[in-house]
Image 1 (cartoon, one colour):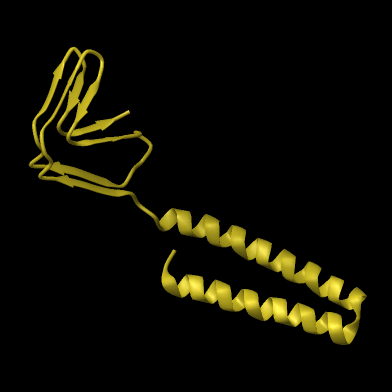
Image 2 (cartoon, rainbow, N blue to C red; image 1 turned 90 degrees about the horizontal axis):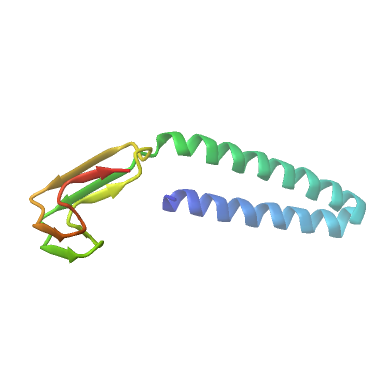
Length: 114
């Protein structure tokens, strides 16, 4: 989360809590409870909307460059590249990766989508 978003959320939370406490003190517990319900509902809707909208803008970017040597035996995995789920999307690259040697296992020096 970006720093300006964190500061906005923290500032907004402090203002809303202070408002709720002020209404409790000067308006009574009944009015404070009503304000608390409205504030909680608004924050929930805003949080859900933010989560749904921000997911669409994010893309996975993975870059592997100049890795070392990896080796394995039996049923192990030697990986000097990238292994990711095929649903990851985004941009992936593996350049100048090291040697991956497997004696009875699996080796990868590039990109494997599972």
